[in-house]
Image 1 (cartoon, helix red, strand yellow):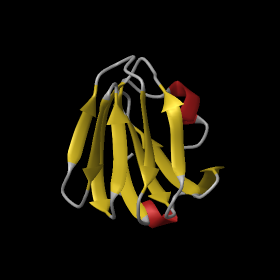
Image 2 (cartoon, rainbow, N blue to C red; image 1 turned 30 degrees about the vertical axis):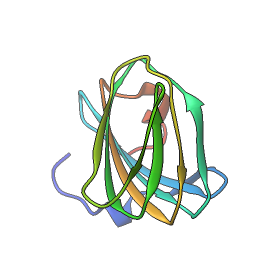
Image 3 (cartoon, rainbow, N blue to C red; image 1 turned 60 degrees about the horizontal axis):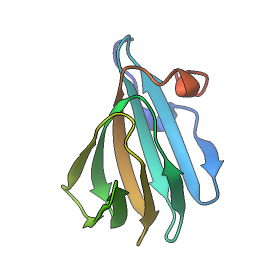
Length: 110
């Protein structure tokens, strides 16, 4: 794919108060999320390994039965098939990386 600008990717509203931009490599999906304050990601799981990195804001993330308020510089690893959910305490910018590719998100990307 080469070089590109994240802000030039199509932005989608996937949940109330949650917008995202996606791009994919052969092996990974990258999701750039903007959560408005109070917006929630409902409880779910998937067969992908996920790494979440907080770029801005405060996000309460629950993985299994453990919760943490994540802030700038915080990251979390979510093992495959592990239930997780979260809520934006403030407006947040979060980057998630999934391995392997999220085929269910491929239609939204590059």
